Length: 471
Image (tube, rainbow, N blue to C red):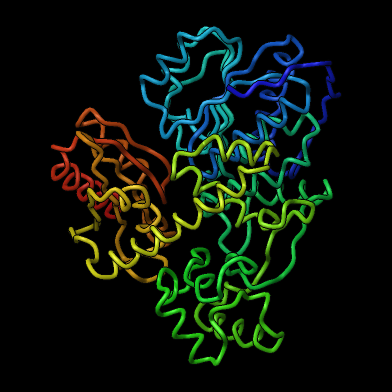
C-alpha cells in the first residue's frame, strides 16, 4: 500500500476549459473529466482513502502516477493496485473492500455492468472500447469513445486520467499523459486530437519542451549500434531488432559503433542522421522532453520505455516509485530491467525473423510457450509488422500459453483499420464463445481464452476479420 497522510484541504476554484468551442465532442469529454475532478475533490476533502486500480503497461502506470500525484498534492491518501487485466475475481475482491471511492484507470470501460454493483462512488478513466451498459449515478465514466473521439489514436488511458484531474489545476501533470500516449504508440510522428490539447497544457505549464532531434533511443547510455537496433518507434526496417545489421551499417558508414551517439563528432552525427533518414524519414523529428527531469527520464518516450520494462517484468513497485518521484535505487533497478527487456526483444525479433508467422486466410499468428517470448509477444508482433520483419497485410495475433489459458495480443495497422478491421470487437465477440474475455481498440486488442480452444478461436477470429473486411 502506498498512502499519503492528508494534512490540509486545498479546494481549488473550479476552472472551465474548452479545446474548441465549435467542437462539441471534445468539450463534452472535457466536461466529463470535470465531473471526475469534482468527485475526487469531494472525497479528498472528506479525508477518504481513495482506492486506485490501474493497468500494468506504460499507459496504465502513467495513469496511476497522474491520479496518485494529484491526490498527493492535494493532501489526500490513496491505495494502489496494478493488475494485468480487470478480471471478474479482481472486481469481486474490490467489492469486499470498504472504500468510499474507487478509481479504475486505463481499464474498466468494458466492465461497467460489473462496476455498477460497487456500493461506493466510482471513476472509470479509460480509452478502450466501452461496453454498451449505462453507468449508474455514482459512476463517472471518462472515455473518449463515448463522445466520438478515437481512443486508439487521439488520447490514451493516461490522457483520460489526466482529464479526470485537470480541473484541479494540474496542467503540470500533462506530460505524464503523453508518456502514456507513447506507451500506446499514439505518437506517429506527431500527436493528434485531444493529445494536442494535453501537449499544449504541458507547454503552458512550463515543464514540457519540443525540439527536433534524431529519435534513436538511449543516445547517451548505449553503444550506437544498440541504440539503433533498440529503436522501435519509429521502426527502422532491416535495423530494428537486429544488432548485427545495425553494426554492419555503421561499419559501412565508417562510424564507430561501440561508442554512444553523443560521443560522435558533429560531422559523424550528421552522417548517421542522413543514413537513418533514408531508412525511415520519421526517425528525425519532434522530440518531447521535460528538462527538469532526471537525465534518463527527460525524453518522454524513453521514460515510457522504462515504465514498460517495469510492467513487463511485473516490477510495479519500481514503476510507481519512479512516477511518484521516489527515485533513489528504483531508477537504477529499472534501467537494469530495461537492459534485460531489450535483450529479450532482440531474441524475439531473431525468432520471428527465422520462423515467421503462421498464415490463415485473413489473419496471421505467432504461438509460443517459451517463458521469455511469452512476456514480449505483443511487442514483437506489432513491431514485427511495422519494421517489415513480418507481413503487414494481415492482422497478427500473438498467442502465449499460460498454464490452462492462452493470452492473446492482437495488432493491426492503420490501413487495415481504414478497410474495416476492428480487433477489439473481433476478439471480444469470439472470446466470449469459449468463456473467455477480450477487447481493446480497433488497432490493438487482447483476449484470454482456454488453451483447448486455441484452434477454434483462431478459425473464428479469421472469419470475424473476413466479415469486417467484406461488410
